[in-house]
Length: 213
Image (cartoon, rainbow, N blue to C red; front, side):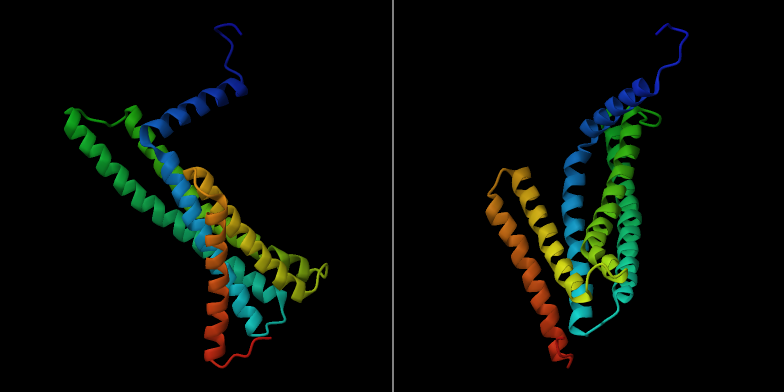
């Protein structure tokens, strides 16, 4: 490539990725994003488990009801995570930037530190909003197949609960590998929380006079 030729798309992307990696190193956003991902995916899976178990014990025989409830909940969680994390992270990053300015006796506007701070804010917000919505959609995915008649509604309920446990198991294994700890122990902890949540929801429904289907 000559000096007069514009850089290719591949070269531009490579430079952008290098810059993003530098931003991650400056802000340590990788560790924060991992925590947000696990925490919010966990919330999304358990919230949707509540929707599914609640529909089951209430003897809901309409897959579209579960789908619409699930989509509305997933959208609400995603928007809540996205906007809430953006505002909270933006305020925290601005505070850190102002502290850095005081320490260095220099204005940080239009510097790489400000760019890195903005990047970290956006990335954190995206992870915070995307992870619970993704987990929720995975959990309710069998009901889309039930709606078009590929599987029975009862099968969709069982598949949904199985997927929830798989998501929780994955998160437990991910946490264990991230911290170099016991995969079995972390996985079982997540599964136990999921099972206890399902039993608690069924128990609450029973106390309210709703007989499990």
